Length: 270
Image (cartoon, rainbow, N blue to C red; front, top):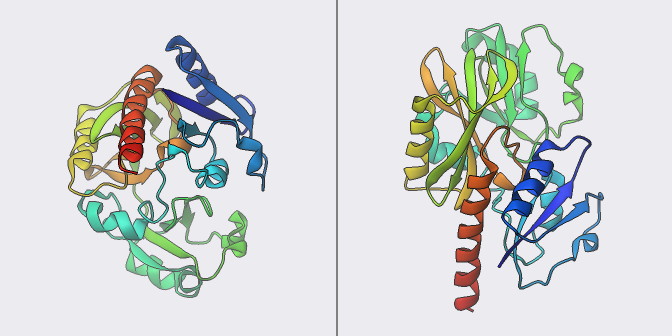
């Protein structure tokens, strides 16, 4: 039997409320905990051998990732780094012109990069998927200090690319190499969650799901529509991803199925 552990990490948590509603409808046991920084023992609610799926904030899943539950979370930090998945999904990226370098080098050579990219604005994001800082579009004259970038470790690897005009952004949930559900979440720069899905975006997500390499059996894929067509923005961990208008019923059913399968395989092999 699959059980869920959910974490509160803010007020008005729509994702949490929707999961509670769906888990209740499907008569699945769940527990809710409050995220407490620097605490781990607070979450010892289930037996270590139970089949547990966790959902909460990035900081919280980092706290409970070594609890020993199977499957717990699908969030291999190394697999979710740009340096890893760009190797396999590079041809799908909207940022085909990306440059990867230490943050200190970006600061030192910022004017050179902006000139080489032939744009007054540039996109910057961390190599890590663990939100070490927020991705931004910086205009030529904006100072990094405006975004507290002065606190970033000089050795932090960052991705630099030209600014792309994005018409629409979609998030898809991949489970066992299948697109389970998806949601529009931004349209023409405005936050606009909707069940409206362009088939071309869904088809690209499924093509990525079919690729030989995969970061895990469960992950999320963000697809954008740009002037050049459809492309991959990034991938991420399901366990801490915003799910917008994705169908929670389909998510819970698919997640429970793969969770039980992985739990049974793990304990059969030991």
